[in-house]
Structures are given as C-alpha cells and as structure tokens.
Length: 251
Ligand code: NAP
Image 1 (cartoon, helix red, strand yellow):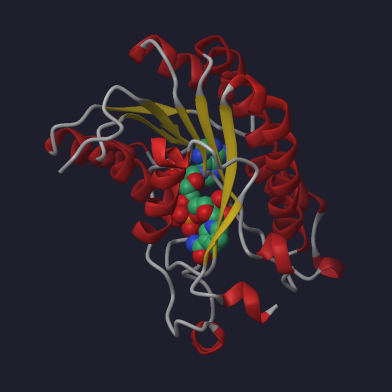
Image 2 (cartoon, rainbow, N blue to C red; image 1 turned 30 degrees about the horizontal axis):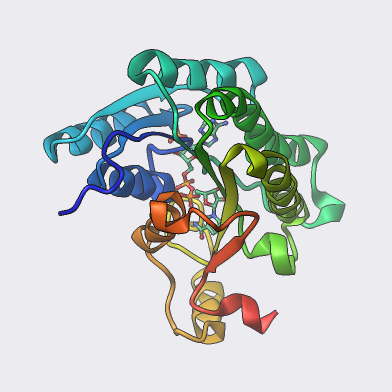
C-alpha cells in the first residue's frame, strides 16, 4: 500500500482499545510512527504496538492519564524525545458515567469532564508549541453525536463532547495562521467496550433509527481521522465530520 503518512509522527490518546486502537493501526498502515497512549491497560497497548511493528511500522506505548495536565505534557514530550517531532495529535481518550441528572454524582460529572474535555486542552496545549515551531500540524478531536443532538442520561458526556466542538472551532481560528488544522470527528454508535453495556433493545432502536441500518466499525472512524490527517485535507479546518450512518439527521 501507498504510505502517504511516511515520516509523520502521530500521538493517539486512548489507543489501547476500541476506536483509538483502530486509529493508531490505520495511521501506522499509512506510514506514520505512532505513540499509543493508554491509562491502565499496558498489555492491550503493547499488543497494538506489536501489531504496528509486525506490519513494518514504528510504534511506542506511553502510559499517561491525559486528564492530568503534567502527565499529558509528559506524553507529548515522550513523543518528541522518541521521534524528534510531532505532526498529528488525535485526542481520542474518553469515558462515560451515564446517569440521569437527578441521580448523577459530582464525581461522575468531574471524571467525564476531565477525561473527555480537559484532556483535549492538556494535550493541545503541550502539542501547540512544537507544531507552531514546525509551522505545520494536524489536530483531530474525537467528539460524539451526543455533543450535537444531546442524549438523556448523558448530561456530563454530551457537555464534554459539545465542549470539544467549541474548543475545536476556536483553536482552528487560533492556529490556522500557523498552518495547523484542527478538526473533529463525531462518531455515532460503534461497538466497543464503551457501548458494551447498552441494553440490546436500545441497540436495536439505534439501528432502526440509523439510515444505514447498522452500527459503525471502529475502522470506519479511523478512515475519517486518517483523511483529516492527510495532505488532501490541508484546506479543511474547524470542521466536525460525523461518521454515524446518518443518525444525527434524525435529531
Ligand atoms: P473504549 O473502548 O472504552 O476505549 C477508551 C480508551 O481510552 C482506552 O484506550 C482507555 O485506556 C483510554 N482512556 C480512558 N481514560 C483515559 C485517560 N484518562 N488517559 C488516557 N487514556 C484514557 O472507548 P471507545 O468507544 O473506543 O471511544 C473512543 C472515543 O470515541 C471516546 O472519546 C468516545 O467518547 C468516542 N465515541 C465513541 C462512540 C462509540 O459508540 N463507541 C461514539 C461516539 C464517540 P485503557 O485501556 O488504558 O483504560
């Protein structure tokens, strides 16, 4: 295969499982050296690096809680130390603590906001300076259609994902003059550990509401991210690309 991202270095947060794993593998398949970030699951992250290396690529697993300012800075520094530069940052790490507002605990709000939104601030803040110095860079944030249309039981999650959208557009305006694009990808329902606890009848309802009548695959989100990281996407910034089988159109 053609390797259009040869010589590029990417950091993918939350890349040990699910969508992040698929993004790391796809960027590597296109030639990028990939830093595979994880929080707890060292074994799964090592497996992703092994798969990248088995396919002839370069990968590095780095443990960091990206909700923590210092650890996020350490992650970006680890990428710079290992590969000398940073071209692509994918802010993918995320979590849920679904609950109706009246039953939601303060720690459920705080944990989701720090993991999903503060992490994006933390990693972008650390990555912006080296990207500005290089006069090029790609930042891709993973939001959700919940952040666009809202979802009962997800006030914390939807707020964090809507926050990512405002953040993405604002940073796109700030960094555009420095030749750095900032975009977001908004997946619909993708079977991963995050959605595993969804009741079967809810899954069926989602499939019925989705114009393409199915859930998505992690790889289908990864292709959108790889496109936004590519040279072909050089004139796209501040964009929110939904990868949802059309579900967002149902409101
Ligand atoms: P997942 O399977 O639960 O994987 C979550 C990943 O994030 C894991 O690699 C986990 O690392 C990592 N992570 C969690 N907290 C972290 C932290 N504080 N620091 C560093 N890494 C952390 O989730 P997923 O479904 O792939 O979701 C990935 C992204 O897509 C999330 O932002 C999610 O909100 C978004 N999304 C998902 C869906 C969907 O239907 N699945 C839909 C819309 C948007 P460990 O393995 O070490 O725990």
